[in-house]
Image (cartoon, rainbow over all chains, first blue to last red; front, top):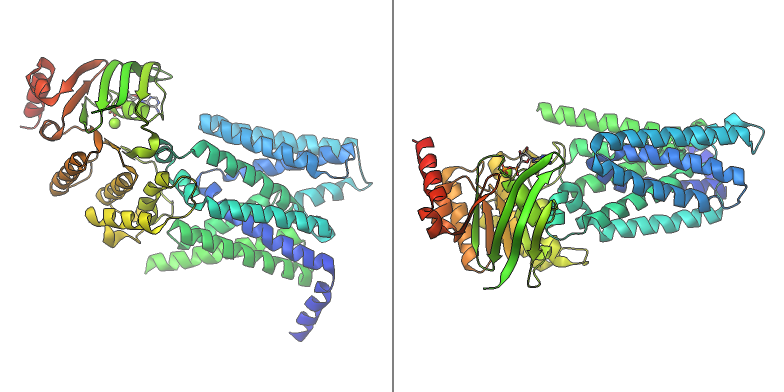
Length: 282
Length: 238
Ligand SMILES: Nc1ncnc2c1ncn2[C@@H]1O[C@H](COP(=O)(O)OP(=O)(O)O)[C@@H](O)[C@H]1O
Ligand SMILES: [Mg+2]
């Protein structure tokens, strides 16, 4: 036991490990808060689509050689989020199809770009890194941490200030609209914030595993809790605990960070499902 | 008596065609308008058009006198809430108060009291912390009605509000709505219950493919449309 603790102490003496922990917890918190709304609005697919768009944008940014890749990734992802939400509302099936189409295209184009204009000699490691985030979280600079800190703060403030309206718009959009709540504005804000979180989270778990970070805590919480507030709080706690646990385990077992976090989320989901089944049987 | 809604020669429908047309009527403040018509005649569509949720195909629907969506309460006919939506009764009822709050983010004491009083009024205070989706149909209807009442400060639109309520609760609901109407809130109600419609409403709008009648309830009872409908309804229920 003391050996474990001293190993952890050793690792946490490195700033990049501390950065990874801070960023990991913040991103997990933001993703889970938004996840509740996205899951309930049946928009969880959007997380997946957007993460692929962000991957494509990142590849394009790498090719252009810009040092600050966020300048390209962020606007492209936000724009796609807005477009996807718009089409998703008009006709259900078309919305689904367009998400799949956009996400696969972005993935393919990103991969082509990475191959045609290789930035480093090891393309497959590059691709693997961006998709599964295996290395990037351990390469964070203090600037990245600050950026992540500020964006998380914005997300948290947004979520706290508009919590009640988000509930209303999610629960019954036509009632909100009929009683003069600007539901289009809130949907737009939800789309933008989703895009922002996905871009931040890409550094952490990579673009493939982001949807897991968004979906799992919400689904786990919904197994046991039955009010919007308790589900939101529980999802946030599950997500933060799993992220912390995942990072620590990945250090101790030398497993990939992103995948370990998702495995922890999956374990939490199974535990919560088990408890809810046992409770239902009583 | 000031005009709140003016509907001029409006036609309503969906992509696949017109549902009802030639709608001409006015709602003044303090009116109690009952909308009658067969199933599928476009009553719910009309309510949605009045609320601005479904734009009309042609014609004009105008809101007058500084009257806006923030003054309205709405009870939808069906709320397509997903089966797994986590929401407590209290959260649903409170969400009716949101339109009054503008950009202020949290519920204040006034809103909490309004929600509590409304729940008491409708006899659902004991359900406060229950999960909305686990209630019976009639209980859910009351919760949504409580939400609508919290939102209504000048007008209340109800789309078949008594569906799923037992006869005693139906009478209570009609009395409650009548009381609200006396306190100055305009009512627009879609109903199949013609006996209650003519008992409580000040005006009747009867629609089918076209508008069949609009006017005072007493005139409706003497009109050919009204006589025929009441007779038909009587036969159906014998
Ligand atoms: N979303 C929709 N898209 C297309 N047609 C619809 C839609 N909703 C209702 N309709 C059609 O419009 C007509 C009127 O419906 P509705 O207004 O719900 O009738 P009512 O409330 O009077 O029973 C029906 O024929 C129905 O099939
Ligand atoms: Mg209807």
